[in-house]
Amino acid sequence: MNFAFKSSKESLYRIILLIFLTVSFASYGQKMNDGMGGRFPHPVDLRKAVSSFNCGKVESADTAVVKQYLLSAIANLKGSDFSIDFLEGKQSKTGLHYLYRQNYRGKPVYRGTIKINLDKNGSIISLFDNTYRILETPAGEFPDTDDCYDIIKSIYKNDNDIVKIFIEELYFDLGPRLIPASRIELWDKKGNFFELVIDADQMIVYERDMNSYFNNNRIHDVDTPALARVFNPDPLTTAGVIYGAPYEDASDADISQLNMQRQQVTLDVAFENDTFKLESPYCLITDHSIPDVAPVTSLTPDFEFTRSQDGFEDVNAFYHINVYHDYVQQLGFDNIVNYPIWVDTHAMGGADNSNFSAAGSPPRLSFGEGGVDDAEDADVIIHEYGHAISHSAAPGTNSGAERLALDEAIGDYFAASYSKSINSFNWEKMFSWDGHNEFWNGRVVESDKHYPEDLQNNLYKDAELWSSTMMQIMDDIGRERTDEIMIEALHSFATNISMTDAANLVIAADVALNGGGYVAPIRYWMCLRGFIPCNVGVDELAETHFAVINSYGFTARNEQAVIRFNSPQTGLLELTDATGRIIYSEKFSEADELKISPKNVSSGIYLTKVTTQNFSSTYKLMKW
Ligand SMILES: [Zn+2]
Image (cartoon, rainbow, N blue to C red; front, side, top):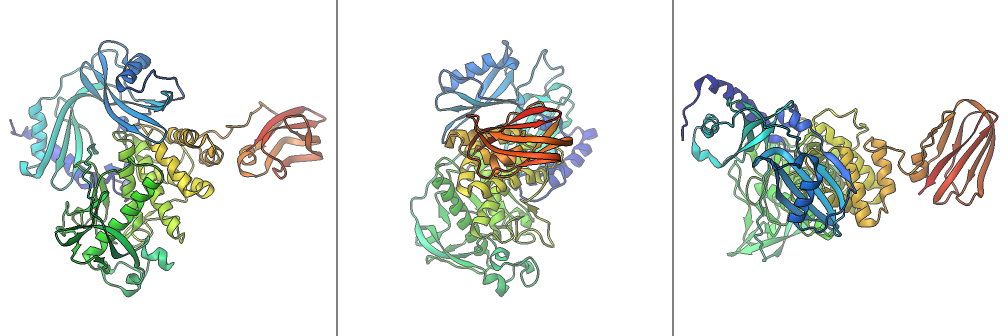
């Protein structure tokens, strides 16, 4: 292997990589990051999947049969230069979810994936096509393997710092064109896991934090109940106060007011070699990241610690992760994070951030201790666990600007809904204890941002659109129902999907799970947010004399619909049911607008007839 530097370029890589290594490994963290980890400047991240819903049927759900179907159905795959590989298959409560990858002349096309979601009869519920149309072979050479190693050597002086290197040749989308490129995947001993794409001139054309996909089904079958104390969900929420003395971090000190907020709980722990350990079939407290703090163990089934003790964060994370895993399982999902996830609560070199990484087997969570210790706040723990849930339901799909924001949003939603179910004090504050203080601002799950004009191409800021909408739906139809629908929908997520696609997947999941029983409220909130059009369910007539306002609120929310005239009118308003029976009538004179109340109107379709001296028109209104 030639590790000699090409010296003219070395300093350039160093600058690029220094910026990269400093700021970009927080992509799966919960914190705001305005560096590269939080922005999507590259065209490959701004691509949109071509989405189709209810678009046909396959003869069988056999992956080879589906593969043949896709090769014949997708225009970009026509011709002998193209093939596809099966990457992932998942089963949800109502369907099957397959991920394939496009190849051109035997080499993969970077993110040229296809996600197909089938119901159990083989009907295609949704399909997300990210393939590329390639009319001629992309010009240029593939980079030399030696060049790849030069770049690796410029990052890591010592080969021993690297755990894993993976290099593949592929075609990469530069925006205006595809180029032959090499993708380098690196995992190091500090837990960094990232990919670089380089061109034949040794230029780094793309870089990002990475996920990878393994599983490990090591199961501990020994469990013993132990007593422990935790924050549930955090000390400010249970005390009903906001951040400020004496309710402040004070460098993890044993402040009595904070210690008093600890609640006693029972944990199922493992008992091995005369020692109780924080290990369960779905969570393993470890020390996989610096600082070196060994997982707490006990010779008695007693894990009661005060917050200044290292064991407190271990217990807190262990408790909330097990509770949440049990909850997901009780919703009927027995294949979600179905492995003992590694959890280090004294991690990331003391940074004020946390992350989920799928680099290792099994995947792991790392919580930093900067500012308020992250593992003292259930919002942080469940947010990060949310990434693990998403990775488990839809592996290989967390790429693209809105898709990444959706992953942050789903973590925020799971965390906020969990906390709110325990205690609703200041529920809208995301990271109630870890954020909204001197260290950082936290986020909210009660935003009035509207789609798409309030998107900022920042995965954390954009997350608030989706998380806030899910909280509204949850308040409407209940937490368990909303979570069941969200997790079912998550299985169908694909690379480069938009929030509109996600909204349609949530609706499709309700149709599959509940026969569409909750589509009305879901549509209502999704339409108010701007994710989907608001005229769904109501026949919009082309009407020039008046506008109908809030027909959706009438249909789904028991709110008044308003007919607003272009100029004052005198005449008669009649509401008739499907049989022609008049159920309401009103004479009006020089009116600017008419209000139609949903009171005493039962479910059905109604004709609203407006007759004036100038015109006569009908408008169809629906009441769910
Ligand atoms: Zn996150």
